Length: 107
Length: 246
Image (cartoon, rainbow over all chains, first blue to last red; front, side, top):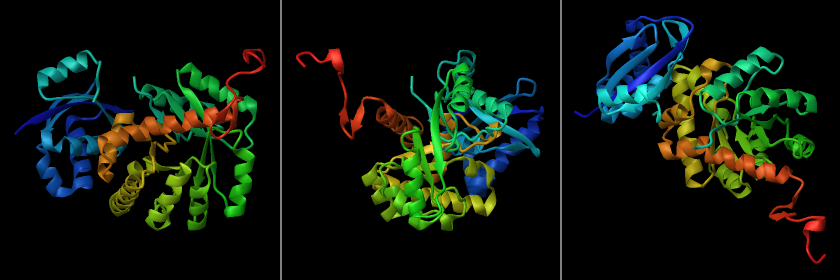
């Protein structure tokens, strides 16, 4: 299965636990695409930095559009207002980390 | 670099802090221009102070007015009053009659359906035909999509899909706007394009709806409002001493 890695930035007044953020992404996918859609996403939280409010998600290439739409549709995490912005997308974790360090292109 | 415009940013104009916050966020997310709905009786001083706020963050202010007419006669009267003063004119179509009249009128730039109630969204085949002939664009406010949940959002997505498909079939330009009145409802231009996937607008068209389509409206109307404009297709290109042999 081909995969895509998505770097995201969480914007909100609170610091969120890793689980809260991951639950919010799953909940958004479930709301928008249902259980079947969520099952196709192949979603995994690869990395989470609570202080920097950054995370890296992994999904299947076929579900990239679904995951991007669901991620940016998040308006709250654990009942607190929050937005999630996509910083970069890449096919490998190494390339993604390089892109995030040198942010020329975005999504 | 691509030009990105959000033609419907809705700050509370009575609160300088709120307006500043929203404009700064918009600039941070990568917009080059934003349209702010202004009251029809806005003064030059108010526009200047708003423009200063935009200039400070490197953005262009687009003067927009939202008309919410009671009936067709009211719409025509309001259009006469505002056409030469605003860069973008949007008509909030609360009834089918107004939607039809607005789609026919070449002075209207954006057809806006403010209601999230799908029965009050009147962008059908006939409406699209009129809009295509008069160069009006369909505006889709993304704030509804972010603020609604459950069945209401499903119905709205279904209406958006129908409208986007009709617009594509009849070549009506679509404009994606934030419709945001708070920073948490603002997203980057590309993120709105990702959200447009939910109602079947492909990435290319969605990007056009955030870039080329609003830019075309702004440029067309700025040309019309310039002193060199005479009539559609007729502009003064030289005056006085610039005209050799006259």
